Length: 276
Image 1 (spheres, rainbow, N blue to C red):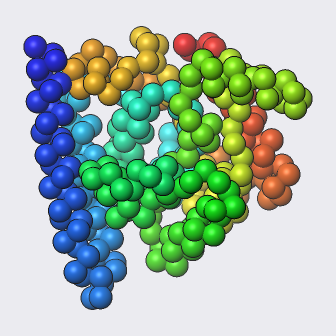
Image 2 (image 1 turned 90 degrees about the vertical axis):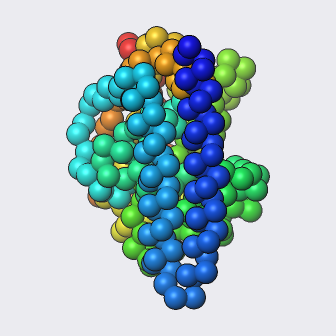
């Protein structure tokens, strides 16, 4: 029965997502009149669909998000630094964003090829998400232009950055540990070393636009769920630990911002060791 509920929920959300894409495409006709109106439409569409994703889990299965750590204000602009284990991490962030009035304002760093995929890919393109090829020289100018757009248009944002660069897998963790040993860096067991270039660029470009950096540590005490398992109700509770750092308190120099981020992941590693 749970699998039937999961399949029906997936069909329902997929159909609504494609309908949302149609609304987003139609909004383009308003660009010559009001870019602000186009952004408002797309924010509403994204916030509505993501909210339905969250509410589906709550309504069908009583899914709950347990949040520990710092309380953060509602509707605050922020850069979110997260560990990345499963696609379910995205669901956790959506769940949290809904409680803080920022669900329609999520901006993701996304692989460039995803923007060609109907549904999620097209939807995030209309939201001005950050599509990257994971080549800093190719990505830098595009990222700078997009960040300038956020600031000049005063676009509200929660900028989501999975700074490990990929999901945590045993072989990838081994490669990260080997790199850390060879370069005299901390060796982690529950997270990978963060890639700092994108984070440094984000902080430097958005210091006068965001209020804080949120350090999010996602954990799954009952095992790491897939999105299919969440839709089927196999997991009832998700866990999130939050630390808030006012942007004014972050180091001003690149040379100190990089180790600052590594220190946050050292804290994540210790937290996950104590809270598996």
